[in-house]
Length: 291
Image (cartoon, rainbow, N blue to C red; front, side, top):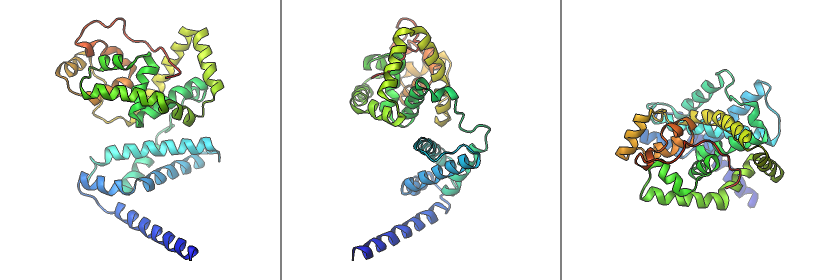
């Protein structure tokens, strides 16, 4: 009886999958319709993007059957899916399944599509790359970048980004959740050991300036890479453009997202969040390993 039930359930699951694939192959005409169809098939779309990445790595001789490569493929599948969700709404009418395949194929057709810097495979690079990768999909990790890059607390983040009201309250919650569980979960996902974290801390104490200079160079590499998934309407701005945004009080998400992922704009916009009042020297990266 149990075997029959499992067989029926499996058959039903396959039937549902067939219907989902069929719907994804049909034309969607509006952004709302795109959201509705895609939201019902996210696990399948992630699996498709991840499988395409594995296939590309195998065909180019870059694949090993181990957990590190599985994580790598899954992370890139997630990034492709995120880009698809962002751009898909502006590509209607379209066939969602074919749009995803096209987006992935376009990325894999670029020279060195993963742009993986060899130094990002070492402990310091892995740490910075892992933080930035998490920040693309987690607001807690995004806000935590301000802490890890500059050593700021919640109040300094609020001042630098010119926030008030409900947004300020959210910053405190982001910090608390990151300390309680987000940092450790991200470290585990990176595969960083306690020994590696201690060594990073020791390097920071022994060679502070050299350590921070290296970290600033590497995080620019990581941030430039992950900003590829940033919406097209989040470009770098001049100081006058940042000044207008702060003065008029708009672009809250823009400021939070862009400044966390762009050291250059952080230095350009420095001080504007506090109504132009002096906030000391422009920030330089002072890496904090722990939250």
